[in-house]
Length: 624
Image 1: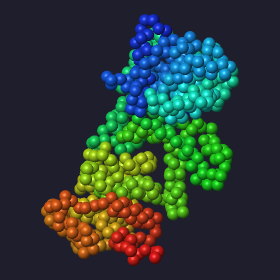
Image 2: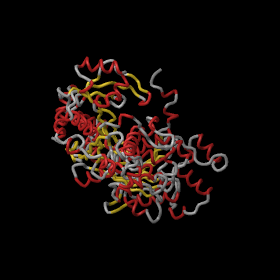
Image 3: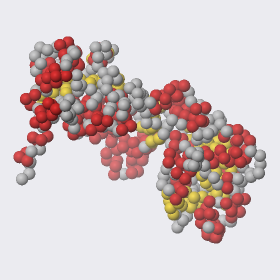
Image 4: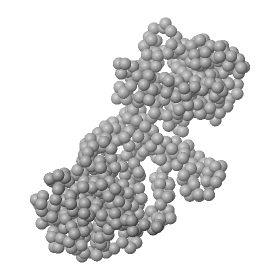
């Protein structure tokens, strides 16, 4: 075995061995190899033919005997994360390319290219687990197999390559070239397949230097079949994940991430900087755990966006963009640049630019409306949101627009089916606490947000901690709860601390603004409740609660639809009628008001209606 040079500083441990039919124990070893390949090729159902009727995985091929097999791991005791096979001319009658083309066409093709069957090897079955692909294991295994073939005297290599995931383009980077007129659809792989040829005497492709370097390592990487059997016996799908290289902290993180049916479910992502050795170790252990379901890496596209955001004129010259990206990397590899973010609730691992650069690009299209200095100012503000039904639209709009870098969210309720008419959520979120749901969605927009959640809602015990902490009071409150006591108690706190409050009433586009930061003695809710205090609103009956809410929202200004619906609540209607369009409008209205308040622009106290029915009436049209 041999620990060979790393792809972008990620080390890999590779072992190579050859299997010969008839030797003791080799049938069992072949079975483990076929199970490993079948599991990876199955790809969560993408290629169903690799799933057995018993629920296992298999990739049965007679040409496994007599072939060289290469296994890639993170370390000597880690689970196999990738595999590639190399067939020698001794088993040329079994080559997949021969079966694909037919014996006569196969030999004719080799002659046309100037090669003989006896000097041509076949490269096949490069398969890599999703979590190791973006870290470069496939690249190294491929280079290793080519290096081994050259070391064993191959004049040429031939193989079939899929095209759906760009595997053919991947092989071109090593010097393989597609053979014209050989591309066709193959049912088993559910994609088009093409024959590709590599000429050993003409090293080509961007990885030619790596292949030559690995030729010297191949002899030391070979192991006996017995050694290979011992190492492969450590692996059997998910069982391997439980037995190898997963620290307790990673296990807890994974466990929390998978429990999204609980009010205390995980909602904070984890960040990894590959420039820090502890982060690198922990990330690789996470990858080994099998918990990563999907790896998303578009950092090279993000780098292009970064340099063209700073200098839009670069877009006219691809060469200039490439030079700017190279300068930005400053000698670092793309895989090492930036931050890898792990979202345990979805199993996604995402590669992003560093925080400040990510935020610069993410808010680039705000410019012209919100300049860079204003964006930085807004990101320094702290916002509280009470009530994450209507309030979820506000919270997500704030996160998208960059209004606030720190949030406190409070809601005791869990998502139910009837909430799906207005909340941005899916059926897989049912039963999840609403502030946990909002926090997750906001973190998926900007994983560097500082979010604190109060999944028991706002109570007498949590009121102080919600409004103020060691950093001082929050800068703005978005109040969208349904309970009169909390609505008034929250305003009492806000007035005492000089915190502005905004609210969307979700009827006729009503935006409510109370500038307690400018008017410390302003009556709560514009005096609509007189001198009523929160203590007087405890333990109300249903009828009393309804009367207080109608007074708060000014019953004489309600829309005809809501006025007609109110008497039916509790009889023919289960609760207040609300529409997604109204909730979305509320998010926009509260965000616009909050942005102006936090930037010091004019936004006085008062009530303002953006009644879409009135504003889009026929007599409002600007064209005849």
